[in-house]
Length: 418
Ligand code: HEM
Figure 1 (spheres, rainbow, N blue to C red):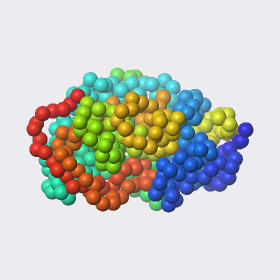
Figure 2 (cartoon, rainbow, N blue to C red):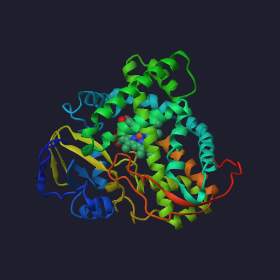
Figure 3 (cartoon, helix red, strand yellow):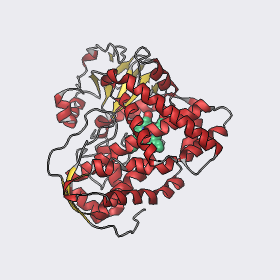
Figure 4 (tube, protein in one colour):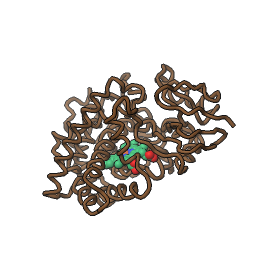
């Protein structure tokens, strides 16, 4: 049995137990992340990275998610680096447990209940078609800048009850805050991230006060109702819930829609199959989530020393679960590097798993599905003529541009919401 040294994000130095090293900042990982992960997974389910220990095996990740002595932590921020962000991370919903977590989750689940999400779908479809109508020059279009980029903000703004112009600002703050996921790179960004956090809190505090005075049929009003009905929760909890929802939603949906469109562009046979049968859209959404997951790592901390699959994990160890690593593990699905819409599995870890599994998954799936359905109905032909940039291990890894030559049909007005 090999024992890991306790590690922290700072001062990581272990040549731990001969584990393979995954250089997530290195050129090979940027060029061929999945090839490198396959090679390392053949040696071990756990690897060292410049950031800590990272789990790349699917069954082991599930064991970690099920283990009550290994807890989820919100993006770890060192108290010395930023007392503010350290405190906020500790207060964040992702760092909560027990009855308090259950109460907080219940409020968001109620606000994002499936029947409510179904009501939102028609508006999502309308936004998608409007964006396609606005593409000025289809022969030189960019499906990130002109479609998948603005779509989540436009879709989320009425749901949150925020004017679109203000959603743009919220979205910018959320993208900045989500840089916390870029662990090794955020040092010089801390003052900017702190400023974004403060600005978003000020904005959401005002919005909460406004909705408490005049409730509407939006998510923030639902959160106010839920917290006010629970005597054990207070205004700080309400603000923290609103922050969690805004931070988790727009940026992630954007990254996932961009990446799923990218996967369809790179796999013409799968795109043809989807166009021939748009009722497969939910399967395309699921496969996109598995194949090119938004956000890479899910962070955990070992509370008490554990033995797991041949390793001793001492108390205090920080463990990252790599979505890229686990979602392409052949023990999850056969032929994991093929992008197929005939799979029936939704067991990927893109939305996490267990006690902290994403509460926005139903909304996210609906938004991505409508974003794809509008394309299946309108695109008569598309081509990705040249190279395009993809963000590497950024918290919301995605293509930065998708320059395409498009042949677009006019919108018939028929809603394909399903
Ligand atoms: C494609 C889009 C999305 C992805 C990839 C995503 C991914 C995730 C992941 C990986 C987690 C942590 C799960 C775990 O620890 O096991 C999470 C938690 C969470 N997500 Fe999402 N998410 C997305 C969209 C959304 C949306 C649209 C909302 C809300 C409107 C949302 C709200 C939340 C909240 C509040 C949590 C914290 C749950 C908790 O800690 O108990 N997410 N999400």
